[in-house]
Amino acid sequence: MSNMLTPFVYWAQTESKITLKVDLTDVEHLDVDLNKTTLQVIAYGHGARGMNSYSFDLNLHSSVDPNKSSYKIKDRQVDFVLRKNYNGWWPRLTSQPQKPSWLKIDFDKWKSEDMDDNEDEKRNILNDYPDMYDKLHKEEFGYRKEDFTKVYLVIYNLCQFVGFIYVFAVMAIKYSRDGPDSMKETFDAVGNPLKFIQLLQFLEIMHPLFGYTKSSVLVSFLQTGGRGFMLFCMIDAEPRMQTKPVVFYLFLIWSTVEIIRYPYYITQLLNIKISFLTWLRYTIWIPLYPLGFICEGIIMLRNIPYFEETQKFTISLPNSYNFAFHFPTLIRLYLLFLLLPGIYTVMSRMNQLRSKKLKKSYIKKKYN
Image 1 (cartoon, rainbow, N blue to C red):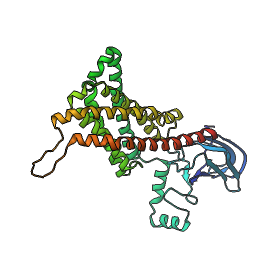
Image 2 (cartoon, helix red, strand yellow):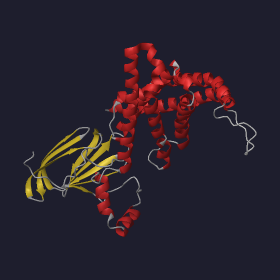
Image 3 (cartoon, rainbow, N blue to C red):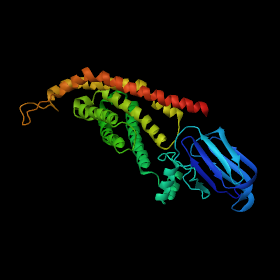
């Protein structure tokens, strides 16, 4: 097939399908091999090099449904309609970022995520902005430089994954060597790396603000801020708490959750679907989140007498601002009125996400 000529192929997409127009007339002996992610076509017809045998292969960006797809030979072309397995806009047609010279955009049928079905509007856009043709070619085929946001998010999630793998590995090695005695040295061993990772995590509050992710700013703030409060105010600020075994268990829970969460985010960014990783991401929280809340509650409860003694973070009267703040009272109020509602809110949200994600995965598996 590699010695054959290649016809021009024009493509367009909607949210649910891909259309291809093969620029061949008087087609004879058409041979089509279509599966979920590849399309191979061999035809004898009149193309750019006259009457000849022509062929092309396409490794598709995402999967299609061969049973619902079709093709039709016309006098001046061959039309293909490939039904997407899952509705959504593809960033390009092919799985590889390299641009085949024979693959073009079918502007007559072109639609994008930002362009509705109004044909007059589409023509006006293309007439008013002639460089839109070049822009569409570059953007839709993915032949531009990798999107900065995507590259940044991949690097960020990879750094977090490496950081938590390091914390987990150090704790595991020390425990396997020294047993339970290593627990009292947990903060000395991994405290500084964990603080650095946690400071980086505050970027996750900015991601939805900048439109990098679709998560809620409030949810990101509560999750990241809550963990930062535990690490910096409850543990780092009180040396006597740093040697307690509960710190070991809390760090272990945090690390276990994150070395699953961040690889899942990376696969989502790279459009890689790993069913087991998805299941793990939305299942591992069931035992670990309650245990994490229990560890945090124990740390806060045991810190109350320490902060009563040291008066750290407490503001006493008189002062120039005429303002008083008693930090141990804040801890007590949180444990009495906010801990259980917080557990319920987080667990309910994760359960909703789990139902949505795993149900979606089941449907995909069923039709694959």
